Length: 268
Ligand code: DGL
Image (cartoon, rainbow, N blue to C red; front, side, top):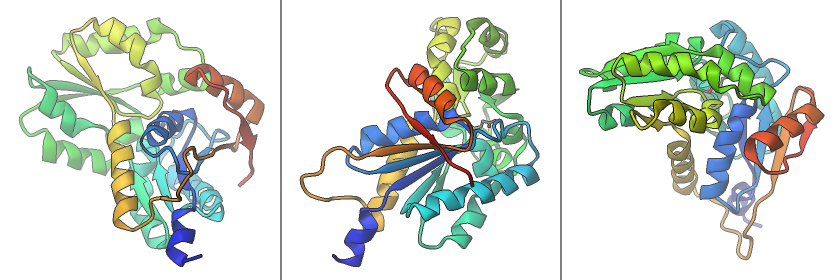
């Protein structure tokens, strides 16, 4: 087998602090149906969003080698919080793997806003990060950006118990400030899209980075000759790994996605 074929048949790694990364697994699976995917949720340490950048660096450094050991040809850091802290370092350390990170979808939100005001829902660490400050400086010059940290939303998704009333106050606050676009700046939040849209009641659009990240991954793989083009192969396998409780993760993930998801516990 040619080296390039061996590389293209390696899996795509997707990493998050918790179950939020499943929203990215869904987008990647839709766009790249024949790729194998290994998803790793560092649930022993979730949430990342209330930790310092130094702690997030340590945790991400410890987790990513699990995906590298599985032979990942590319790794999506499906966590806005961790991406802001570590992407450059990972690219230098693992030259044989492509790394793709997430940032809140501020650029499309600015383009979509008619009133010139957008609200970004994310973790405190993402909102305080240098990369997010740069994003605002570059893309939101004449747009007002309202930052809304909502760490408790991450916990709610991790517990698989979504209470609409917890979302009400922050969404109403964004609307009252004039925002007509709401950015889901954390990979856990697309699981809250429906209740958030209900509260917004047509007064704002909701955007996230999931579909754009899947497209970016596809073009990175295509440009480096790593797309899996094995003939006759239509459906790739997905393996779900967690550093937390596999049984509990399987239960909550199946509830959130509406499909049977089986997690395996790994130590790293
Ligand atoms: N899902 C992660 C993100 O996109 C962070 C959640 C957390 O661990 O706080 O930022």
